[in-house]
Length: 420
Image 1 (tube, rainbow, N blue to C red):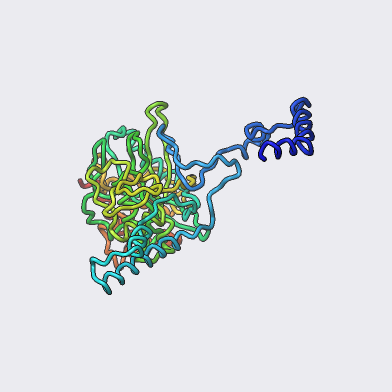
Image 2: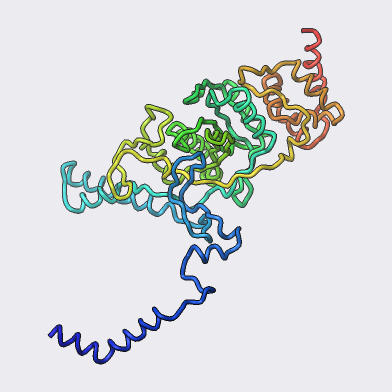
């Protein structure tokens, strides 16, 4: 029967099909027509041929590429429901707790087994960017980079906190970088207790600035954010979230400065932590890193990576690339010389440096002479934080003359450099 059906097909429709196939094979294809995707891409303008990142990240320091989209029209997703999967997982976990409470901890059914599997975290890259871009003040970035590259020569990892603004569109602007007390070597940085932390926050708030992220340096390595970097980024976002809410904290970024050993070029990249990573961090599912420079994080319970159970997750799954730009801060522009940065072993903050900065900007009105974030933080350790600092910062922002006594007190302090 099968052979007869084949013969019947050839008699009625096979010859037509064979004839059509022969025509297609024999006829030449015009040179203007191309079935190759590569040829079609080459006909596009250069801007449209540029490969763009979607849900993953790319390590520009010579390492691997992860989850990169080759669609020339692809761009970062603007809308993605990142909370529904987390809420569904939480509902299944609550259902398991209810069954155990009702029937006992040894209760095992197909429903419980299925719920346990479905309640595990499914690790996947996030497509949506909470921070649409990070723009860093040229002077702040240059000062931090010059110290790391010029004086330290990347022999020590360095850490800083970025202060700035976030506009309504989700674009982040870093206007100043504060470096807390720390120790570092060529492998890792270690933060120390900061007695000036409250003063820094006060000065920043009075200037209309807030913490917008962290920045750190690293020698060329195979990972982007190490386990220690992940912990610092998550800790900052959680702290801001607890103090001000999710909408305030969601735009925090982590910037990394490294050097390509092959070309010697300095690389400045920005990233953000995904909502999945933050949910896991809130629930203490990340183990304390035993080695701070690892490219992965250990979890306290089993999670699913590519549908496989594991407790070891590559940090690339938890971060997204944020476009980075530069700008000139409207508050700290036109500076002839910067004030020394706190907590640098090779730089000292004292009356002589205050006098030098005022002398370099003596052609400006006095409130504009004080437009230096590190200077104001230093003055915050001298002046009263309640009565003096808010009024002085308000005068600096508005460009108006400080309250009576503030100018005299600062100039008197600077004059002490002549006596020492």
